[in-house]
Length: 96
Image (cartoon, rainbow, N blue to C red; front, side, top):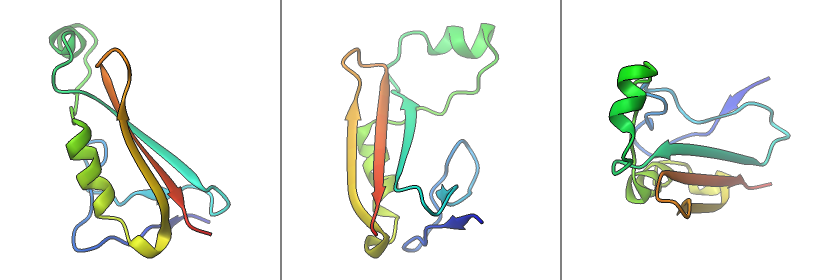
C-alpha cells in the first residue's frame, strides 16, 4: 500500500510533475531527492546529447520543497550539496 505525505498548502513538484512526495512502503522511514544544481557545467551536454530534460534546484529550492511537508509526519530533514558542486540532496526522515 502506498501513502502520500500530506502537504501544507501546495503539492511539491517532483520530476517535473505535480505529484506529492510518496513513501513507497509505509515501513520506509527515509527518502532522498536529488537534483542537479543550476550551476552544473555539463547541463547543456546532458540535455543535448543524452536527451535528459534536467530540472535543476539549489539547496534553497530543496529546503522550500521540504517545508511543504506536514511537520507532524517529518522527524528530520537535511539539505546538502555534494563536494563537487554538481548535485544537491534533500533527505527526509519520516516520524514514527
